[in-house]
Image: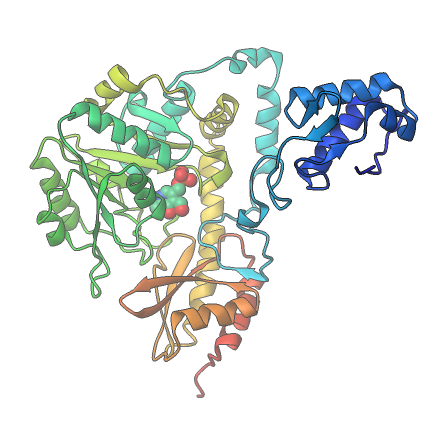
Length: 471
Ligand SMILES: Cc1ncc(COP(=O)(O)O)c(C=O)c1O
């Protein structure tokens, strides 16, 4: 029988019996008291701790009620349960299984982070403060299931002016992340064609979440290969398959940044129009940040037969944590949505939606995009300038848009794994791409300052032993 060093403090607002109960419970969780072990009798414990017998009785009663201990008549109290080993936390999550995200990188070339220094904190805070007041108490109640109408009106207007997409606010469904839009699309299609199993296709190397999501719902998924020369998806491959849904990023394909030409877009539209159950899912992620030429209108802007589901996101234009994404549904899918799955409540906070709607409606959004485009363009130009100094060793792709460049190391004998490890040894995080045995890395710069880009690349090339050519 153990007498553990329980520390009871009368000056605390928590009653003594609760303090004792909590400490015995913790001792069981931490493995200091194990299954079958006897607890001191009530009398022994109250003598030892100089507390009343009532206090011990109450603690033991609570532990009994929760099943931590059991009472054997005329024998005593015993620990009744073998709890999870000590490395398991109280909520049952094994600490060692939680992926450590805490590694500190000197330079992280993550392609999916935004420039946080230029976020309009003050303006955002001002709108938020105004909305968190009695005048807007209605925002505390649940809102429109498809998302706030004010925001859907702003999105429809933005799509018309910036992306050439004509749609009604009623066709828009706002969701927290494109994965929720994809889940709803899957359900909609099943309601439309209950007798059939949908066949999905997406670009090789396309957004991994989409593939994982479809696979985890047991859907049939085909990856459309990217041609090693044109660096675009092979549309002839698509024509050979009985596919129902194609997920595609026509204006900025990952990772090469390729853009589908008008001919390729027409081919896709012809393909989708051949069968009533077919749909294209256009993910227009990243389209706001184009640095060369005019913005490329969305594929949806050419969709005369209402066969394209448009997906948009505020993750890069504003911030990923706001979780405001949306889809524009073709009419047929919209009517199925309203009949069968409009039970989903909006997954995004009403207040956040209203802040964003106000930000857009007052013209701040447009100004913000223009300001950020300038910032990102400067970083992109700097990155290209640096890389151009190594033409014998480095080729790059995707300089016209987005927050990253794809670089290819030429005449390289080391493997991509070796090169990644070399960078990691210097606390530099790069993102390798596995494609036709080519040595490719994504270098994102969203949240790196210009000086960090310079020094980060210098350190990276140093550790890879890449030198400028001698004149
Ligand atoms: C192509 C693409 N679409 C969408 C997303 C994420 O969008 P959201 O944050 O709106 O879910 C990503 C994120 O990396 C992406 O790469």
